[in-house]
Length: 102
Image (cartoon, rainbow, N blue to C red):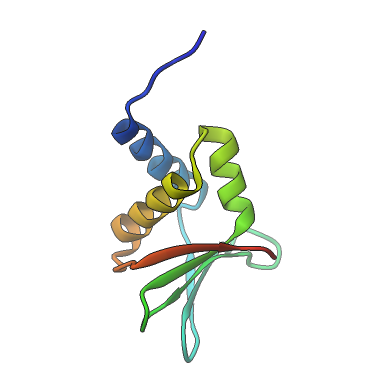
């Protein structure tokens, strides 16, 4: 059975899933960016970094693969959902989301 979910509803589900997966991120300021990391992981896994000057948010690519596999999102849809999550929950003005390899 295939379930059809409207795009706007799907993005909301992804944002909620991200918030449930990363409910509390600690912040570490650096000269040129801010790192948001998960304190519940063994080594404080950095979830994303944010460059204040450019407004770019950078994620490890595995989160993109996870969103694409779990929710069937395109690369652009994954970027949009992540951008919405950051803006809603962290109050940051995001100009661009980038995914990169570890």
